[in-house]
Length: 194
Image (cartoon, rainbow, N blue to C red; front, side, top):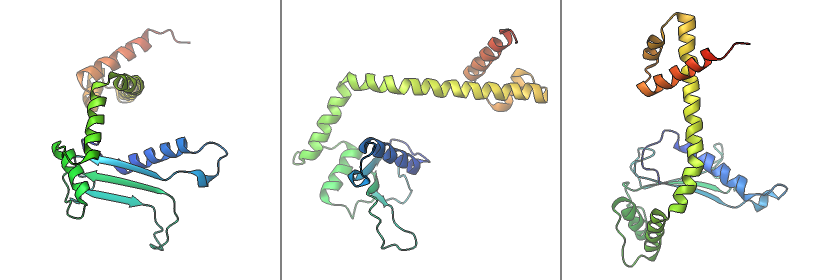
């Protein structure tokens, strides 16, 4: 579920589609075996600022709109607070569920979804797997940010004669980022040069 607006949501959908395709087709298999791919984003913020409840995208030829190359992909963005006048009753109930958490007694699908959500919230195995996968990525992103900030500070110090604090102020670094950069620079200065 997409809980906040994202500027690159279209590219994110493209990335998910390509990941699904890579997992769907084994090396040497015929492209006819490639499964239909649908990426669905459930959004609490309107991803395209048009106020409708469903945005569906398919690939088409710009020069001949009636030409369908049968690429077999769709990207669907559901906006829980959008205008659902054109939607089926089932879809309106699902959007109500997303927005308000209402689980209609007569809707077996929404009850099944709610049961799955409750199970996942209570099942710690999934959280451990998520942490196991996501934490190394976050750590790598943090190391990259520190490296870039440190290189920027060192460039400003050497090329423009700034002090460490002047360079950090110029870059708008927060206290923790400054401390991390200072630690990296101090370690580099302590290492013997070749």
